Image (cartoon, rainbow, N blue to C red; front, side):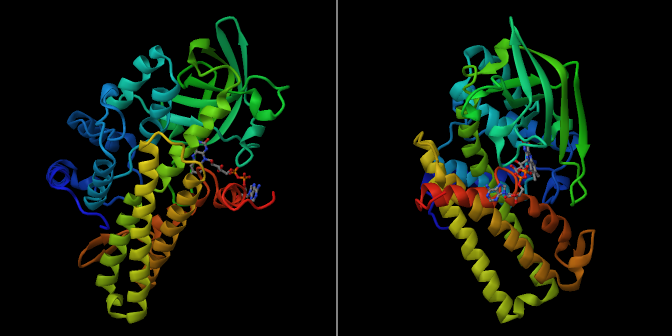
Length: 383
Ligand SMILES: Cc1cc2nc3c(=O)[nH]c(=O)nc-3n(C[C@H](O)[C@H](O)[C@H](O)COP(=O)(O)OP(=O)(O)OC[C@H]3O[C@@H](n4cnc5c(N)ncnc54)[C@H](O)[C@@H]3O)c2cc1C
């Protein structure tokens, strides 16, 4: 890596490596799909029992209170052992948001079950008519007395059909101008009467997300996060966390290892042209590690990431796509196989990760939208 560990960090890395090697079940290593909850959540709870499930959360809320370098070491060691992707909406999204904006009662109720892996969260932002233009969302929440009544639909909800709760953006003032001034941030119990959830299958064959319908769903007013009609500010704070999370170098490091294994197996590693492209890809991953390091540092200093989040989202997700293009090249004609390819160095799944990373430049705000942000806020280009 581009950074040297201090003696304390080296000890932490060694302890993390030994423990992960001993405790991560073999069946969960190197998976290209996210395993279903019945397989994944026991591992989540094992990490939680060790106290390592939330390196970035403060200790008072059950996190590790890890330093920046410890967080990066943890991500690198998880990548090294081929750990699967955990559900992020609780740990990386609503958890940090409640820590920053939640009431004492909201923190007490919702943070411990996230740490314990007892409750899975979904993110309810996108709607059929509101994706990139999120401020046009139409799901209504009408406040009367001590409860909201929610009517509308969300879509592309990651793990919606596996989730117990959803944090959602809802329209609470339809007449507000500008439109985002009429949006609030609500916590919704997905087992409430009037909620219908339908899984959607992706091009890679997994049912990662779903559509969620709300038909006059009653939600206690105490589930409002922040003030009424102030949801946009909270939503934007969360998008920064999300963009950083989608570019976690863990996925790029795993992809790079997969390419090397495949290239060794097919012999393409001996081709100087391929080696040049592999070297460029390795440099790209090192650059992503440096960018991620910088972004985590800014977050740790409690500074908003701003356009840095957009730059790292574009770089990290487009790099991941180019790594998976290189994996296809390394596999040669085997790239067309739907199932993992058997090699002398173990099985390598080629087509699934290639198909899966198509989505990375769409979720969390598409590359086009991130480029618009950089154009406006960094380059000062006209709208
Ligand atoms: C795997 C996956 C998981 C997801 N999980 C969730 C989730 O858990 N919760 C959730 O709320 N959402 C989720 N999403 C939805 C995601 O946030 C949206 O897909 C994304 O914001 C884009 O919105 P859209 O799909 O409506 O596309 P649109 O906004 O309709 O965009 C279509 C195309 O037009 C381009 N475009 C749009 N506007 C502009 C512009 N102004 N300038 C230039 N180009 C533009 C876009 O870049 C895109 O290429 C997920 C999406 C995916 C793929």
